[in-house]
Image 1 (tube, rainbow, N blue to C red):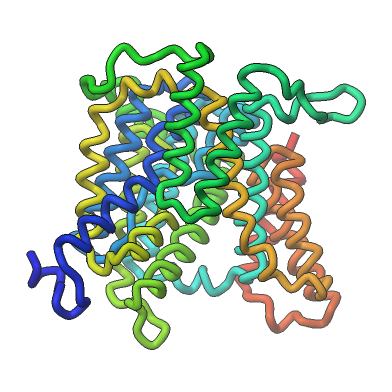
Image 2: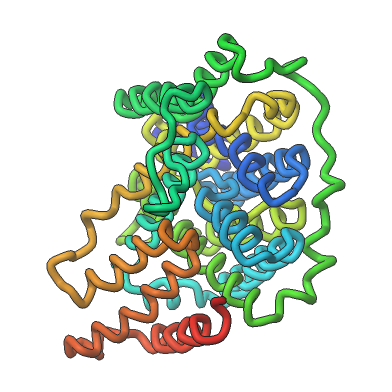
Length: 432
């Protein structure tokens, strides 16, 4: 095992890799409970989603560790699950089964362009400013969902939104959870988001706001309610509405995975001449995990930036991911804890994740209006229209226009013109 992962070359040990793998697991474990909570809003069985989440994450992470040999974990992505639930199913009225088919198609496209090495060309075609703007917009959208779930932000007939009643017990619990989580994250506590959820749930049970679970360890929930549903509705994805959904799944995961893999690999010192060795294997881990996850019954799986916590703890090889993957499999037996994961428990995590995602805001060149305008529209439209797809579409439509007017046409990749036409048609014919 040491020779397979080249421990000596990377200056690591079993102990370092184990601690790193555990650190990554604790940092990302929140998704095991938040994902069923988010996707459960569509009517999907939460137990089945829990199992699908853990298995898809374990598959992707173990593939990344054993085949690509990188200390990078994968799991259903925040933002992608929000888009799946609130934009596609609840917003567009598309059945969750058909939405899963859209995820499946996006995964198959990913596999194809990975095998034929087209992925890098598309990555380079998308302006970096729009990549940053997409991440920021999704962060605001996720934070808004968290604030809404907590009861901190409520609907208001006069102003559309307003401040909720902060003295309500569940809202107070969410505020407490947010403060605790922020304190741990600011202090650099690894797994701070997960621990924040645990503390919030315990306090909620102490004060009678959350029912205590009847047991902690139980049998693995059945996948029957969601398994294979993506295939039974696959023929329905080839419609204009669903194709736009597939494109959005595609681009969001595209940016997320590419950025995360490069960032974590750089931190681990794996990059060589600004290139990633075994990049094809790493990207195949992500794309195949999307297909596996959709088949099992969950939204798109992607590389997790929380992997950086494991690298910071000393992880340098794929053995770190193997350890994380085994912990994800072990977590399957803790499904009874799902009953304590109420909106008050998940809301603080959503808000904090939103804060972290907006961190790239300063990298956008705001002093250049031809860049600032499409970036701003991308960011602001996501939370205000309650749609990630609308934000991306606005940015991709406006970018070629402002760049052309500024006289920077040569900097626009031909692929951007194709996307311009697609999203103009989206607004003209598909948006109700």
